[in-house]
Image (cartoon, rainbow, N blue to C red):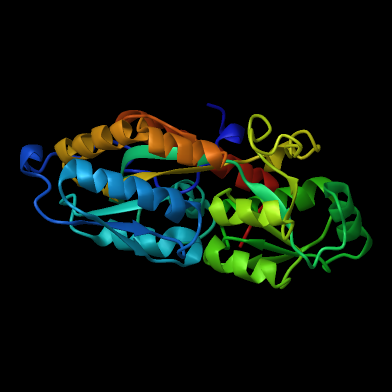
Length: 324
């Protein structure tokens, strides 16, 4: 798993094992579980995550209640989870950037290495570079040419300051010499609505039903994608690595996290349930149809992956001189 193939960005669990607090996993859960999605409703975390949460609730015998809490590139919602009681009844379902990327760009109200515990990943997702009706060009080459010929006339929407998309934009500009205007949003739901209305020329987004539908209709046009290879459902779209911008060829990784001192027995129980549900045909098909790839990994492996991502991100941000 090389970093450039999995740009995951968000939740890292305590980068070490959480201490036991004496809870018994066999008594858990006895009430509904709140799942914080730190982005606005309507994106890939919502579309795939809600279905997975529904299945998990049935398997665990208690409802998983999704709570969208958007803002600051996912760090507001992650901070909410970090401050919650470590009893297994508040979880995060997020990209991993609030724990592996944001800490190197901004001051946070939580300490990623100790206040969040990794449970299990859900999937990794390519990032689509999408043209809206406001963009007159036809291709990636047109985008770069226009952004160089007329600097800061192309508006480029991402899911927020300090997000994976923001870093991708910075890397694209550094590599190509193009100059664009960053338009940060709280999540992809509102971004898609504004894209249809032509409020900006370019947006980044992970594939899910709404975006795929707009691509089929021709309302949005796919200029490029990211990942270790071309997206199976969009084989005509070249990756940013193929287009000469390997630094920006980043994908998003999403997973479940909990407050840092959540008992290991509860973390293990949740991880096992998540891994089981990722094998369900309905979840597999939902991901396959949207070019998302399920990832099965236990808490220790997920924690180590997040640790490595955080270290790699720190180096990339320092080398690129990216500052907010």
